[in-house]
Image 1 (cartoon, rainbow, N blue to C red):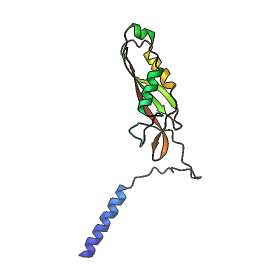
Image 2 (image 1 turned 90 degrees about the vertical axis):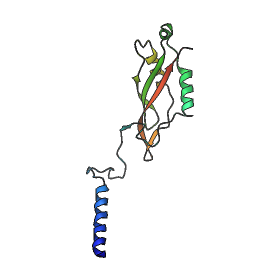
Image 3 (image 1 turned 180 degrees about the vertical axis):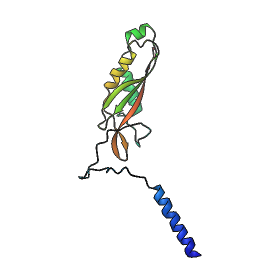
Image 4 (image 1 turned 60 degrees about the horizontal axis):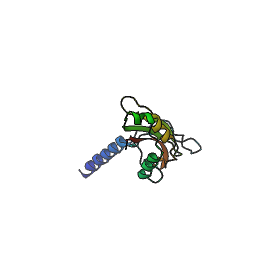
Length: 149
């Protein structure tokens, strides 16, 4: 009886461990020289272990943007205010690329979108995102507030 219980337990453990293993694609992850293939994937900020960071943190990013934004005159004339969400890609090197407006102001933009893009393109390098201890490309969204004071 003990032998039967032991064999059933062993069979059960083998079945569990076999089903828990991932099925491979058959493609090697590494070249013969042991160097990982170049990963050009752009990850979402929710998929990485460490998100990109602006030098000095979020407060420094807000300060940088507020010091460099020049409110477009036409937007002032027409009392245009609101948030512009700018999406960027922070490269493995920390450089900012692929600057696009994710969500802009309703109606006539009157220069706010172009100003947001100009300022974001001028940002210094970020500390890049990391996944499994490696630097990776990552999307990052930055809101820019246009408010008349």
